Image (cartoon, rainbow, N blue to C red; front, top):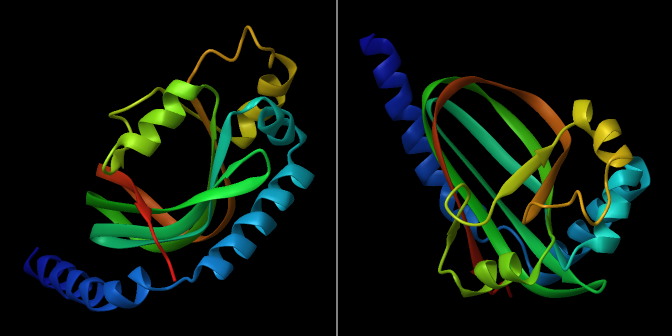
Length: 187
């Protein structure tokens, strides 16, 4: 057990050392280009996402989230908020976790804000913690076909729907996780 604790401490120190580089990783132009490309690709590969996007008040796209951990884990990535096809803000997603976990993974996700209340919560909060604010539904590959068949204005009752895409790498485990989304002002 001492070996695993020592390894976890070393991984945490490496993550802390790399964090300043990750925190300043992207410029406005890089985030904008990556987020636009990711959203276009999501719409091209999952028609239900495009249909949902046409009904959403805004879409927050994180094109590349880097996640890794061994007992102690973390993830970080920058994204852009689209409203009426235009970028209206930039955000950072950061998460930390603790538990039985190991691996490294890269993925993206898009959050579809279905009403003004949810969008205002994102704009007004000083760091939004997933699970603490408006209701969020994750749409995965297994549920996307059923979701598309039943998607009408009367069935879209949740505040936010999220699609995860472009998953690469291997990460597995069980644990406690906290995630925070904050507004950023890249160069």
